[in-house]
Image 1: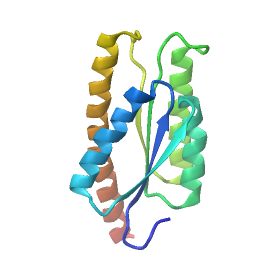
Image 2: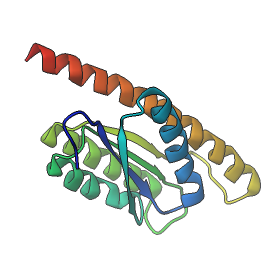
Image 3: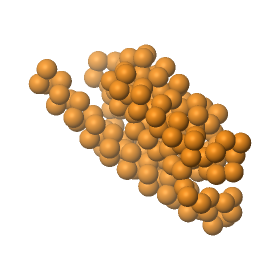
Image 4: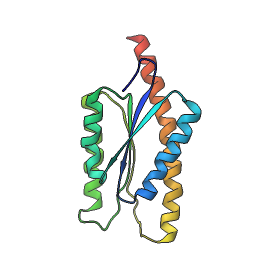
Length: 153
């Protein structure tokens, strides 16, 4: 629950390739803790990336979070076509943030080629950590913009 001077951030993690996706969370948290130690980060795990938009909507409508971050890895080779899944997830996240006025930052990645090999797992393990750090910097910028807008209003 958001207290008066606490920044509350929700972080949604998709369960497919959880060991890789979690690296985005690790990179995000380490950066936010350094730059914004008063922030509270709540984790929400969902089965896969398709569940991210609904979870985002529920969190945004709760009024408890200033920013929502979502991480997932969508790869070719599942039941659904990866391009359809990626487009659906991003469209849903965009609709939620526009409808609810809560920023949603995406670390939902769809690589052109992903094979479940040691080399690809290692590459994306590191890549997701970097993307988590980048999402944290984006989050700090969004929070600053919202703070500036609230002073103008």
